[in-house]
Length: 426
Ligand code: PLP
Picture 1 (cartoon, rainbow, N blue to C red):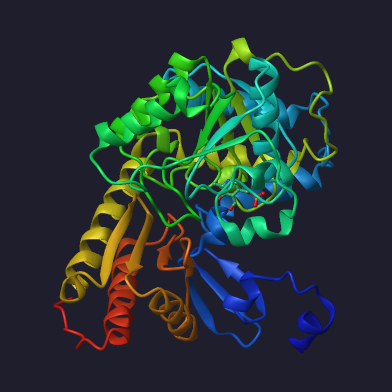
Picture 2 (cartoon, helix red, strand yellow):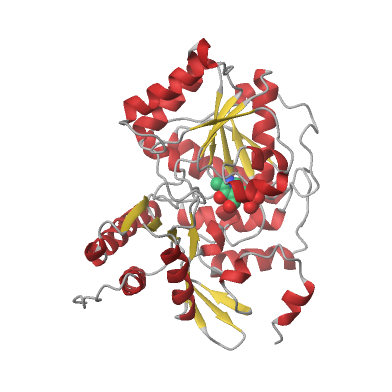
């Protein structure tokens, strides 16, 4: 296969294919293959859209049976059997066991469209123009979603300044303990001298996926939730990357015991990588008029069928989440132990199976990702200076594979730092 077809014909906007310059043909579970038959272990998981791995047999089976039975494929927002089954399953397996009461809004299929809908609804519900967002936050590439995104490179193509945005420091972006950091937020928003009006909403990720795997503590999240309440603002939690089990709970906000007003879900929601997004909205703020956030592709029924299969397979019991949590702890511990010689140059960060090696010198993260790719392991970087090597393995990866890959990743980091690789007992 001639790989130049892409560089000669496809737009310069291509990005992931530059980090992973192979031509891929097949994937199963945690392994992708390229056209030359080379295998790659997946520590990227489709940027979080393939938490359950590639081509899960039960999900594929459900999809094939549905298509063979002439099921509706694009249902817009028509009532369909497939949608009813998805809603019932989501309500029974995800919402009710967590005591959550939300209405479901099916948005356009991208995460960015879910964020757009959330921002619109918050402004409409409060009749306030501004949305507060945080340093390090990433919410998608459409105008509104990008306006609440922090990364300057990503925002460069906006050119215009989108009004109605207030930028605040995420936890850890300023010095001080959690109480003093929350104090700064309270001062900025509540003291008249600062000149910031009460916003319509606060939008945040509990673990910042693109922003460098910064994790908000339960205390900080509870503080922001309380501040939002005090100001009559909504709390929007973007679970697009953190959701569907990535942090060891279905929702990352469960760790903090908070209840957002709006929750954005996408990526792994469809189970096997089909485009599908959803906002959960508190019933009292569901003030949409019919058709006020329309979109042709709000009814990907094939995605709903696969999503239902995923929920039934992985969320009927607490076992899957517990397994992710314990795998995450073991992975982090393995990384910490294996990189102990590089303390100060490399930090292990993150939560659940959303972990990172943060390098003091950013170029080491990119170099590690490149070496590991050559060695058959797909892994990306993140953070404002691309300084974090981001471990996003498919959640279903076998524990043994996961841990031996962690050792490979740590060894690669040590080699790059010029530190001798210690051989560890198996
Ligand atoms: N929000 C978060 C936290 C994300 O990680 C992403 C994508 O990476 C988005 C929103 C945007 O989703 P999409 O790329 O599907 O528009």
